[in-house]
Image (tube, rainbow over all chains, first blue to last red; front, side, top):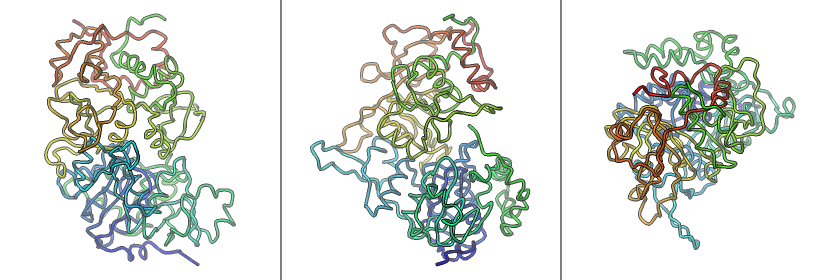
Length: 292
Length: 266
């Protein structure tokens, strides 16, 4: 069993119109190497599901998105992702704006093969108004409470960045917060992971870190070795986010033809030329992790 | 306890904000933005020792973390609070957040999602509803708004109801409106809450030098004078010393335009 793939062969498995979920949280641990490979492809009409960061903005900027389902789309220090904002204000993409917890519950229901999750979250808010397909359900018990039936979210594909992986599909993820990578993985028909470090057998080399596995290997379809593959987002404990680069990216959103400039300058080539264009491996590895 | 003679409006707001958590016991306290975060830290070290706080990322701390670059200071971690557990805390009601909506209406509903236009093509896209729907239906929320005006405290309803309030007609057919817990609303002019008759907004205290009429003129909905309405208490020297320690880089001076004094000239 060898699940190793490369970026191109993963993107070759994606189809127009697919629903794709992304692990990570804002500008943290995003599978950016795969996102850049999608940007280099002719994929289109995608539905994206995320606690979004620059992956959402970039795919919107490139015109690849039909619909967004999100808890937020943010670059943290820049609270609103600039190309997400542009796409929203142009009405360029259909949106299902969710409470952050509703996204969690929808993915959880999807992963558990349930039709919905019962919750109070969303009731009384405009989440109900702007997701008109949401329905309520009445508790069958004595309380009789009316709750939101948050529909299951099923993904065709989840793309997730990890710290370490092996060729069997085992993964380990460093950092203080697992976020919801495990829920994205379980809600998806196929999971493709990128990894900072790829080994033959993770048990042979990182046995002491088994608790950092966020989802089991049977969920994983393919593993891609992509060191620095989360740049410009943070990948604990390997490197922090690149706020300088993200500021340049954000600035491009205010320029005429700015996206094309960004794409040509950084994305157009391959991952080797990308790393060089943003200052090289040593510079990326020296990016400090953020403090709050 | 010595009342300070000189203090900024930001410091007055932090000291007033700390009181929001005073009666809470052991809940997760989340202050979003510099002044609410400093208010939570001050509360932890004075009137609300039971509250739990995080390092702003994924760990619990017993000593509030100072804002900004820390030098040699290394936070001591008392527990783990990743986002999955934050949601558990939210949904079980063991949290009190202080947040800053862009718009607030007479029902106590808040908006951080979008302004104007159609929802699918808003005039101004903002943050999205983020965690506001779940937070507001599950646990207590207080608010800090730095610019008290009719643009923030709107006539009618907020453009997008992100956090729920006391507008029963927004609940779906057959659903009983939630027992929404709104704490205090602290602004650059006053402290008010929604605990008047039928959840009407009522002013609890006016900041030094501010009149009720001035606050009403800056508010898009009617305000009541709460029984015993008073002047917002000036911070004590002890509180100011704690605030300075929690904010060594004086971030608090950058929040309100011109960093005005806490006592307005008449």
